[in-house]
Every structure is written in C-alpha cells, then in structure tokens.
Image (tube, rainbow, N blue to C red):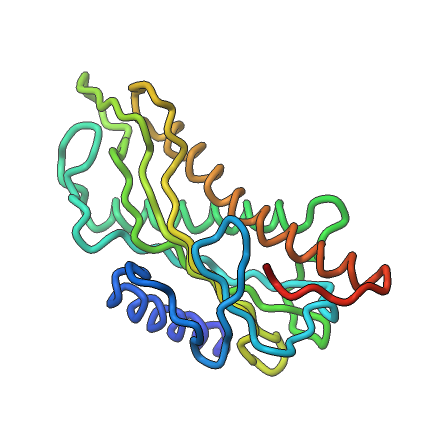
Length: 231
C-alpha cells in the first residue's frame, strides 16, 4: 500500500510537470527520465527504456486511475448551468477513475491477453496512469429541470501512463495522448449516459492501442523473429 501511495504521488508530480509545458504543445523531447521517444501509432508521444524486454511480462497490475480537470475548466459547465460543488467534482473524478480502471482491465485481458493481478512478481508489469486536462462539454448532475445542453462532442482529456517493473519499480515505458471524444457532426443532448459512453469509448481506444502493441511484441518473440521496437 505504501508503494502504491508513493507511485501515485510520483505520478501526480509528473502530471504537474507535463501540464507546466502545456501538454507537449511543442515537439515532445527525445529523452525523458532515461526513456527514449519511440513511434507508437495512434498516440501523441510514447517512450521506452532502451534495451527493456517487454516479452518477459505476462501479467499486469493496474493501479487506481487518477483524474484531474483542466485548470481553467468552467465549473458551471453543467446541463443546468449551476456551479458544481467540490463533492460533485470529486464524485465525477471517482466515477471516471473507476470506469477507466474497469475498461483497461477488460481490454487488456481480452482474447487471452495479459493477466490482471494484484501482487508484484518477476513477470508482472505495473500500470500507473492518470486522466488529466479533463474538459467535459456539459455535466449532467441529474437534477430536476427543463434546460438542455446540446453539443457535438462530450469533451476531451489527456492520458498520462507509466509502465514499471512491479518488483524493482524501474520505469520502462511512458505514454501521453490528448484526445477529443467522438464528434457526431450533429448537435445532440449531452447527459450522464452520453458522457459515460463517450468516456468509455475514449479509454477503450487507449487500451486497444497499448494491447495491440503488446501482442505484436509477444507474437514476434514467439515466432523467433526479432522483437520489434515500439513503433
């Protein structure tokens, strides 16, 4: 538990550092904490430790996922234009974090994928992540009323994630990706059901990209081919 708490604090500091440079508004650095920038199709930036062997890992620990609103997001961005209380904000973050954790677990374990575990081991990765810069277009607090908010997108968010060896804690991978919820092209009523569906779809996209890359590396190793570097 102490290790997890330490990791979450470290992750929070890394997220703050990321926000301080406007979430990679400029070109991502070639090196970050000993990791090298690599190409990973579908993500804004991905980093891997040179020489790291991802094929030894068959299991993964998924830490609780942290959530943070964009600093300048308007707390009155609700369906009924009422300012959200701190309790309501915390509730949104808790629900989104739980939804994201469940979705990552579902996607990572699909099709005989990587096994989800809770204890460290020599073949276990630790996945620590945060959804930051959260900017929902309109939050439905499900309060009584007759006002409606119509949007073409439920909002946007940025994924920040780290992969570490679960026993040593060594950082071996990191990804950052800013994403807009699916744009319908037409105006639609934004409510809690719509927001939840869009959040799940966004996390599923992130999870699928990471799972497919992991599977490609494992498949190459199993056929005797050279293990591909992340691309």
